[in-house]
Amino acid sequence: MRDGAWLYPLVEIVHIVGFTVLVGAVAMFDLRLLGFGRALPVLALARHLLPWSWAALLLIVPSGVLLFSTQPELLDNRVFLLKLVLLGAAGGNALAFHFGPWRAAASWPAKAPLRARLHAALSLLLWIAVIACGRLLAYV
Image 1: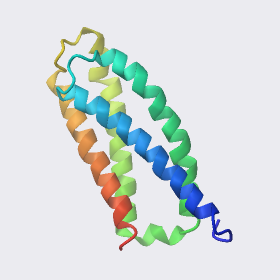
Image 2 (image 1 turned 30 degrees about the vertical axis):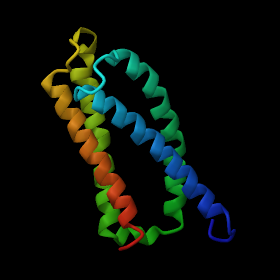
Image 3 (image 1 turned 30 degrees about the horizontal axis):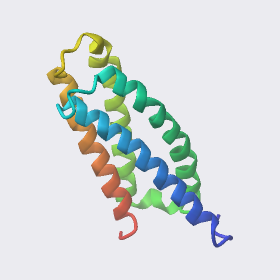
C-alpha cells in the first residue's frame, strides 16, 4: 500500500468516510435515547440507522486492517492500544444494550428508560474517545 502514491490516502479516506457514517448513525440514535428528538419513534429511527451502521462497518473493518498492515509497529503505541480497547468497549456496550434494554424497546414510552440512557451516554463517550485516539495517532 505504501508503493503507490494514492492507495494509502484512498484507503484512509474510505476508513474516515465509513467511520463518519458509523459514528454519525450511532450518535443520532444515542441522542434520541437521551431525549433529543422525542417526536421520532425509537424503533423507526433504529430501522433507518442500523443498516447504515452495518454498511459503514463493511468499509471500516477492511480499510482499518489495510491501514494497520502498513504500520504494525502501532502495536507498540499506547494510544493505538487504547483505541483498540475503546473500540472493544464500544462494541461490548452496543451488545449489552441490544441484549439488554433494547429487547423491551417496543414498550418504551417516549422517554427511554434509565438503563438505555446510560448505555447511550457511555456510547457517545466511548466513540468520542475512539475518535480522539485516532487523531492523536498522527502526533504521538
